Each structure stands twice: as structure tokens, then as C-alpha cells.
Length: 97
Image (cartoon, helix red, strand yellow):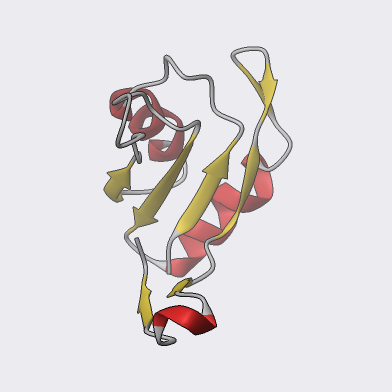
């Protein structure tokens, strides 16, 4: 499982996310997508922790928390579905990130 963290300020870096989530357990991975055209962060991240109980604690405590002037949106990440339009053949690719 991974955690979705939304409504992040654009200046947030991976180290900041690690610091916040470290209070709830060991952070295995942080992924912060960037816009392909501008290279700018997109305002959300995905976090993987050592186990689901740590992830559940982090979600419970951080969802709707005020941080850097913004109210965070923190929940279980949903599997991503990439699908093309019907004209494109209907290819589907499911991945975590």
C-alpha cells in the first residue's frame, strides 16, 4: 500500500515529506511527480512506509492537518488506471505510481 499526500505547497521537497512521516515509522519511499513540460512539482506525493499500521497512523493523524499554510489531504493511494479512449484501443495499465 502507499499513501497519497495532496495539497502540498510547490516548494516542498522530498526531505520535508520524510521528516513529517518519520514521526509515524520508517519511510521506505517518497515519490513526488513533476510536470513533464515545466519540471515543476505537481503539489502531491506518494509515500510508502515499512508497514500498514504505520501508514494507517500517519493517515489518521495527518489528513486535514495544517502544514505550511495548507490543509493536507492524506489517504490510501488508489491504484492508477491508464486507459485510452475507445478510439485508442482500450489499453489498460495498472501501476502504483
